[in-house]
Amino acid sequence: MPLLPNDASPVGDLLPDLISLRRDLHAHPELAYEERRTAGIVASALRLLGLEVCEGVGGTGVVGTLHCGDSAVSDPQGQRSRSVGLRADMDALPLVELGQRPYTSRHAGKHHGCGHDGHTAMLIGAARQLARTHRALGLTGSVHFIFQPAEEGLAGAARMIEEGLFERFPCDSVYALHNWPDLPLGHAQTRAGPIMAAADRFDLTVRGKGGHAAQPHHTPDALLAASQLVVQLNTIVSRRIDPNESAVLSVTRMEGGHSHNVLPAEVKITGTVRSFDADTQDRIEAALRDTAQGIALASGTTVAVNYQRYYPATINTAAEAALALDAAEAVGLQARMAPRAAFTSEDFAFMLQRKPGAYLWLGQGGGDFGSEGSFALHHPCYDFNDEALPLGVRWFCEVAARALARPAVV
Image (cartoon, rainbow, N blue to C red):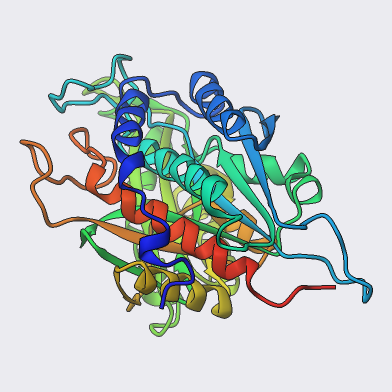
């Protein structure tokens, strides 16, 4: 049974404005740490609800706090009321939008191709719903609505934490969702433990001397060494990692040379590694460095290695994953445990390193929303499915109610 009865918390009247808001955000996408217009809209919407609002958290982040009941008072035993954080990401992608809609991006090279416009609209909707119903429903505690910048590769979550997010806005647990085109509309999944992978980036620079292509014996061949290195890198997971573990190493870029008759002096290789376990991460990085050193020694070149671990694995705590699924089922979603984690990454992982919590996939696929239908995340024609808006609003509200209803903590 839902903690918030369906007939006590209708959200249908919120939808026209939320759809309009979502499409406005889609038409005006902003990249990481540039979300000033979006943050202003969010802050204004939260202030109109009477929430305490703090701007500029982690650059362009916004946090709005709703105090429910006697949330600021501890009981005689020293226990305090519960608090929960609900997070949405706000940034767009540096991607040209190819979709043809009335609200297509008005800014060349910027596109809400991952649905963060929808996430932002859903969390604003949840704030509106809880602000008008929490008294009637007898909720007690604090809900922190966390609107995060820079999820797409620049670690806005980490920056918010570094600037005191959880000291300024204490949370007993934190929750987030992501629209998931691979799941049908009305479905939801999550799991205890890893749900999204750690993301690493490597940049390798192979250097020889450069020379005439007709006289390869006079110079170490950086291009040949780089080609051998690419082949060897693609054996690391299959030959250096336990088959029972999951990992991916992909070389995504190789650059070198400008002429048909010149051996280049330098070749650059870029790629990514995805994994779910820190030990696996360590072994892959060590193997990559060993492989680079071995190729350099064999070819007479040098190989510089820059290896960056930019996002950790997103790891749900068991109790909170169960709460997230129960909340999804309670609001009418077909909820089940995700059979496996995804190799995509998510910087909500930084928040889950600090607090118990869970990350949910909310289905938005399987239907023809708009003339172009459903596209994958990060596709140039992707669009968020507005039919998912009420589902996300109700899930956020149900999660908050259940989290606040837990026994108080010392």
